[in-house]
Length: 271
Image (cartoon, rainbow, N blue to C red; front, side):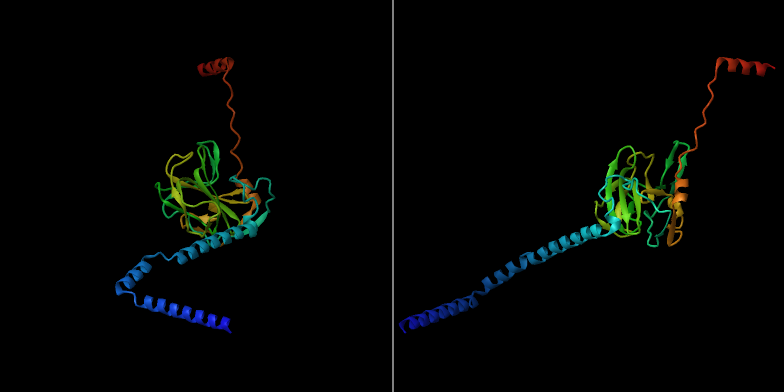
């Protein structure tokens, strides 16, 4: 009985002290109350920051899972080669949806087309669009950035994007890259700024289209004057592409001029 009485007294005392502390807090000076409010107002919403960080991590995780789960983004993805599909079997035909195309650059005109260049005695596997240095370059289709690299003797700074439709596009001779590998991009999202890096004779954008590594003449897909796809569906044809990327015609071998041939030529002229 004595024990219960002590517990009752202790509980009553604790309640009294709690009430006193509460009343004391309620009776704090107005100045202190205002300072407390100002302090709370000045504090950063750390909960919101944490929520934002967690959301960004979650979005990045979703991106990685999308790449891993999507067959387009899982095969030969880790390669550092411009053409990672070396040796892969390419279908004879394939219908490719290009209806979501966005022109890679707003201004400029075509300065060099796909095909053999007699002047340089080599093939040119893309379309060159002459534009001032620093012009924004955007992704032509929805996709994921696969490579962002520099090649001194060729592309200079370049970006390779693999797209949801299975195509890959290459953007070269850039002055600045504004994305990084594994970035998910929508058609029209900026990738870089045009430039004059690598093997280039002036500021321009070098633009390529490929399917499973096979080079495709962009003008069979895109009307560069209208800056739009020729058709919503591009009918890929392996044989046609193979014909278009054949090397230059055989070089004409000049006959060596000998002393006897020169003498014969001189005699003929005298007659």
